[in-house]
Length: 289
Image 1 (cartoon, rainbow, N blue to C red):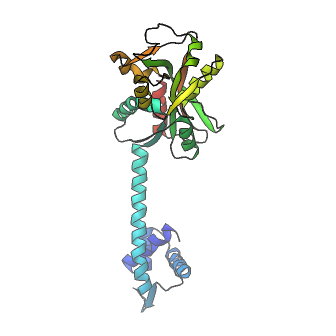
Image 2 (cartoon, one colour):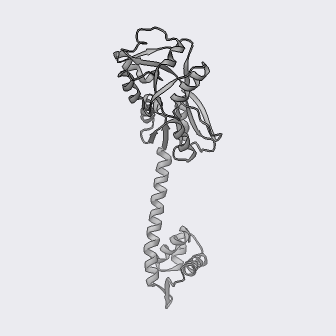
Image 3 (cartoon, rainbow, N blue to C red):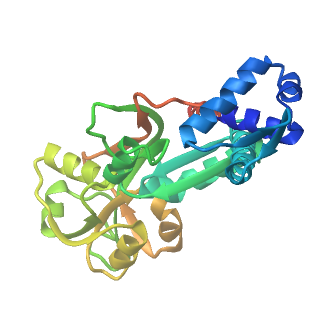
């Protein structure tokens, strides 16, 4: 049964007259009678008793009236909520760890100032998991530093980033201006987990320069890496944005390996078949600006 059937039924119940209901609904009386007959046939019950040219609700009719009013009311709630959602907007954003910690908060803050009624929901994870969430339509877009693998994902660069070599202030590299690449092979590395864009950039650059590396600690967040490095447990390669405060305070030392540039780009990704609402396009446009 359709919402139309229930609206006709309620109107007949309110007037207890087919003709009056038809006038209220700007319909023919025959169309109203047909709708009621279809309801009775569908539920296999009698909704009205017709006595002396008057209508009386049966017990089944009284029961259905309660449901019909509820269904109509809930439809109005859905309509209002959907209209409000369309007007105010809603965005689900996935962010890889580096972007989520050092770029996205400022972006969302600026966006919310322009769109205070828009709801923004954020999930932070590594690039591979953000990609999977997009493929499952659990988020609308992702802001990531890593590479995607699915042909269904569209990708646009929006910001440059650079990874730097970090060590503790007591490490043998601390007093050096430049590090010879071959010396990296002698060190213990503390790096991000598989699926992380930071790890992928690190591994790709090391392979390009024909360097091996030894991993002694794998972490899924930058804070643990920075703490472990500061304690002298190894060295790491991490986004320059992530260690600004620690380098300024002297807790960590930022170094460069001669001839190796760990540069990359932050990217916005989304499904190629994703319908981009006006508010999503506005957010993407802000990234490009």
